[in-house]
Length: 273
Image (cartoon, rainbow, N blue to C red; front, side, top):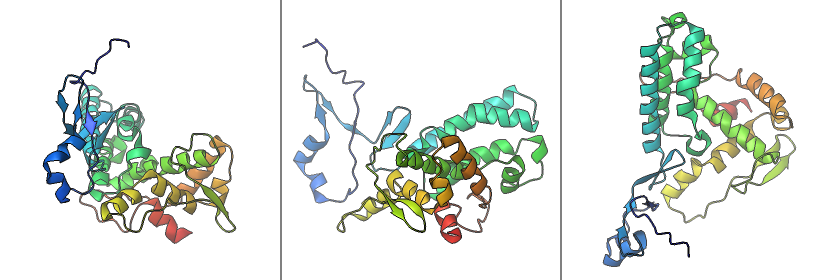
């Protein structure tokens, strides 16, 4: 129709393979279900990971390849900034960090927000590395530096974004792409209903469900104070949310440190509420 042809060198396929032990995957005809053939008959095999709009998607549903990539890129940016700028004052360093490094670590984070301790530690390691170079933070450990700089851990910031996006879904400010439904609770106010999972689903599916935006964001939304959820103005809600989160301890998992408790908001707010 328009004389356009598929560019097989730029076309990639991603197949989600949750159960790799099924005998069916070893059958000769199985590859026909997982390969794509161009109009010229060229076979395009599936890839283990594909980059789409700046995010690396993995065929097992995990986000570790993406987290490894952005952590390494953020470290390179941090090293470049430290090499170019000699000023180690708090104001300069925090400005450089927010302008160059933090954006790389948080792009599209509501989608890939990790639950694995190793992934969380890898991301926190970048912020830990950079804040250690701030002159006013000499002699302070990472948790003390966060308190001194009045900064949230990256884990807390990601979960804050999860709540804000779910709040926007509740108030109709963004499309409800996950088809999340809400109900009213006499004690907790508006609550998001968690998506149901078939009782015969694989264990891997259960893990993916627990780590998905639909579940994690809903759990955080449900545990937040009613006054924050019922605030209909975005700017006012962020102020209310910030005041509340400032009262919640923030000790993220980092290598070499022993966390006194699970630092996720889901666990922390369960004790508060």
